[in-house]
Image 1 (cartoon, one colour):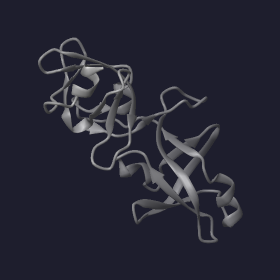
Image 2 (cartoon, helix red, strand yellow):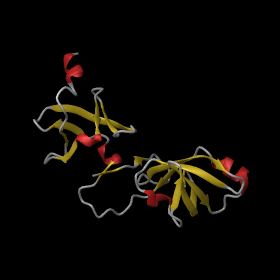
Image 3 (spheres, helix red, strand yellow):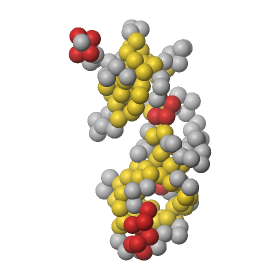
Image 4 (tube, one colour):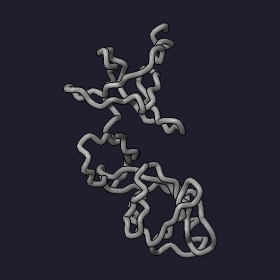
Amino acid sequence: MVAMSRSSSSTDSVNLLEVGRIDKPHGVRGDVVVALTTTETRRVAPGTHLFAGDREFVITASRPHQHRWIVTFEGVYGREGAEAISGLVLSAEPLDDDDPDALWVHELIGSSVVETNGTERGTVVAVQDNPASDLLVLDSGALVPLRFLEGRDDEDRLVVEVPDGLFELLDEE
């Protein structure tokens, strides 16, 4: 299982994870549209504390809206207040996850990738959003859908089981 959450470069704490972005105002009361970059919808639950740089935001209300969320933050009033925070990247502290096999995106970056047969394929430099399956972006230029990720081996490398031909173009170069 891979829990989706982007790593953050917050100046307040290196432990914060990127969880979403404020897209735009919604209405005239101060609500905003938030696009999550995590699969954890509890990140927009009322009472949740989110951070954008040095600012802390507390969610007072939220509701799903199409593929995003309409969120009300404490202390953000009127359309002007919502416009002032549009575009901010939202971060949060990591969740306590009871699943010891969970892999987080920020833990994947920098990991070596090896096929089940032992063939080394490179190092993860990024995780790219993709509607079908997010992709591991390797330093070799290869893109590996996360759905092929089997887990970690004894050497803490990411083990992938990919269909024949996935790496063929790279091997021919």
